[in-house]
Length: 88
Image (cartoon, rainbow, N blue to C red; front, side, top):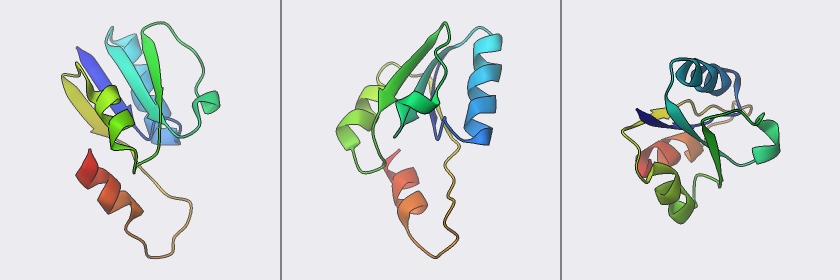
């Protein structure tokens, strides 16, 4: 199965990547900071933010499923996550 994971550099996203790869799936990790992702077999990294619909489309190309592990360090009210989830 081909899986795209948004929020792949966070704690939950990293677990999702590791578990999906361990299960034999091909994984695309979508991240603002690709340097925060350790290269692994069967892992493709697409760089972009939650407003970059072109990069998001590239990350989703060929995917059977998308997993959303978006999070925030800023607890102030904002629409970043809800808008990003809507774009996914």
